[in-house]
Amino acid sequence: MNIDIWSDIACPWCFIGKRRFEAALADFPHKDDVTVRWHSYQLDPSLPEHYDGTELDYLATRKGMPRDRVTEMFAHVAQVASGEGLAYDFDTVVVANSLRGHQLLHLAAAHGVADDVKERLLSAHFEHGVDIGDVEALVAIGVAAGLDADEIRDALETGAYLDAVRADIREAQAIGVTGVPFFVLDDKYAVSGAQPTALFAQALDQAWRESHPLTAVTAPAGSSDSADASGACGPDGCPI
Image (cartoon, rainbow, N blue to C red; front, side, top):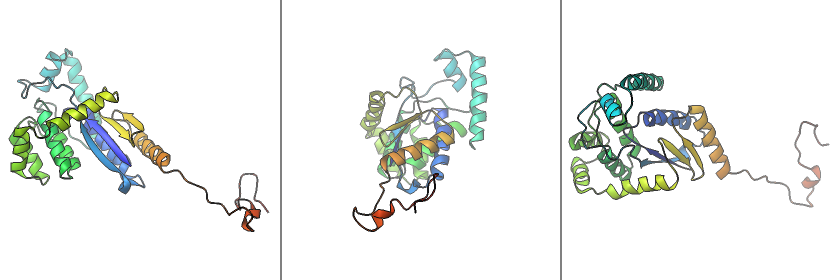
C-alpha cells in the first residue's frame, strides 16, 4: 500500500502530523507492506532565499497577523508539538525559502533515505534554528543521512531536482490540496492536517481492507461437506 504525503519543511503542523502518522503506522499490522512517499509543497514560494527578520516578524508583516496573536499561536503549537516529543523553538527559527530543502528531499528519495532527510530537515528548522535555505547547512543534513556532499552541492547548484519539486506542487494543485500536511492512502483516501493518531490508524485500516478484501472459500456444490451449510455458529445458534 502506498502513502503519499505532501508537506512543507516550513510547516510546523507537518512535523506534528509526521509524528502522529508514524505512531499509527508503527502499530499497523501490515506496516512492512506500506511504502511512504514524500512530496513537495510550498506554503510561500514567494519568500526570499533569506528573510531578514524573525518568524514573528514574518507572520506579522508578510501575513498581516497581529503580533500578540502570533505569539499565542506559537505557544499553542509548541505545546502540541511537545506532546508528540518535539521541542519547537520559534525564537530561533530562521525564516528561509524551502525550495532548496525540497530539492534535497528528492535527491534523498533517489537514494532511498527520504524519510531520514525529511526528519532531519524538519528538526533542523523547528528545533535547532538551522537555515534551510543555506547550501552548506543542507549538505550537512544530507551527509548525516548518508548522502555524498559533492552530489548534494551539484544537485542544488544545477537545480537537478527543480522539475521534480514543481511536478509535486502541480500534482497537489490538481488533486485539490490547499493545505499541508496532506496524506493520500492508496490513491483513494485522503487525510488533511495533523489529525489524531487514532484517525490515521482508522484510515490505514480502512484503506488496507478496501484494497485487500477477504474472499470466503466454501465447499464445492454437491460435495458432502456442502450439506453442512456453513459449519459456523451465529447469534441464532449452531446448525445441526
